[in-house]
Image (tube, rainbow, N blue to C red; front, top):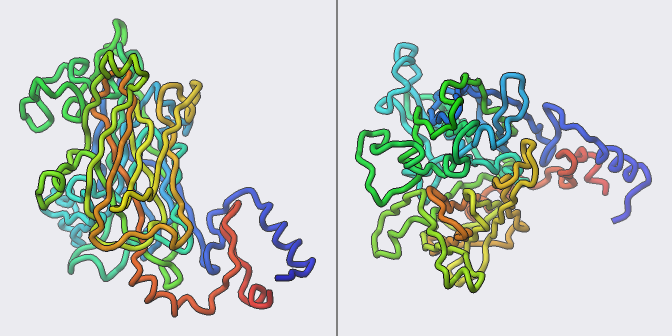
Amino acid sequence: MKMSPFLVLLITLLSATAALPSEALNVRGHLLKSKTFLSPPIFLRPGSVSNKWYFDIAFPRGHLALKSFNAEVVDERGVPVPLHETYLHHWVVEPYYAPKEAAAAAETQKLSKIILNRNSGVCKTTLGQYYGLGSETRHTATWVPDPYGIEVGNPEAPPEGYEEKWLLNVHAIDTRGVTDKLGCTECRCDLYNVTIDEYGRRITEEYTGGLYCCYDETRCKVKEGFADGEARKVFLRYTVTWLDWSDAVWPVKIYIFDVTDRALLEGKSEPACKVEYQVEECSSENRANNDCVHVQATKQILPRGGDIVFGVAHQHSGGIAASLHGEDGRLLCESVVTYGEGQEAGNESGYIVGMSTCYPKPGSVTVRDGEVLTVVSNYSSERQHTGVMGLFYILVAEHEQQQQLLPAAAGKPGLCFSFPVSWCLPSWLSSNL
């Protein structure tokens, strides 16, 4: 394909654009929009835990295609807070339906009045979020590749009398002045001095650490002089990028797999996702053989197949990598951890600061309806790790939907670029190339 000098110059100039404006051209000439929001304030004292749910958060409204959701913890001045001060255990966001009536506004935070609009599986009863990350949030991509998008805000989707809103859960642990930073972030029960969980149920002796011990308003053990430390105010700052929905966007389904689900292996029909598990310290024999790697694997059924267009894992400290495999053993996606090497926010030594992602070439990674997939999670077992996770998040574009959308996409501008911003040549120009 021969291009005129004018076109070469035009493409060079546009590709040199450095800053992403609030609106920029995206796939097939549609506007890409982006806006940054703050969560409600989160108050933390040294050692304290906040694990609250915020309803009706600030979020773009309308029939949209979500393209990314990025977040980090910041202080009152907007300065990023490092993980060794405030550990971000996790954040999750998902839509729900709430009554439209003003009289019911005060009741919307009661679950009986709320209808959750969760993802497509596999663990949607426990892991129903649309987006969610943890300490890795600053260096983990969430971009949904073109021409795909996560459809939200469809006016025909809510039940009669309801409207779509969004909720946010932020689990943050203040580790300033604690006696054991890693132990606090792994929610070791002895450091939190708890014997019952947040629902008043007794914690068994076998359970030594995890979410049951670091729930909202608990406090990890602090050094002398920090017990009366002043509370600080932090926020989750999140940036949402989206397109207005159109037939130029191909919808994707969200699936989250959990390595703790043993249901299929045990012959049970319903998933039993426990979310977290424990890694025991390796034996002296394995240590002598330099083989201190704990491997956990399970099998789960993907309800609907299609093309995998994005994949990423979620692990905690001690994590090495996680992978997702097809029924025949083929590798679908591997997600590898990145550990920080410094003190500054985004590069904190000893903490997972990023997870690699998979962006397969369209049509190259296909899964079928009902295919049994294998999830593998690898952790270092040089020491014990409590409350670890091995989750795998994928986006799937169903073949049937893609075929239906192909005629609508015909004749649209085809010469589009994604770096450093997403943009397309206008149709009158691209059609002459």
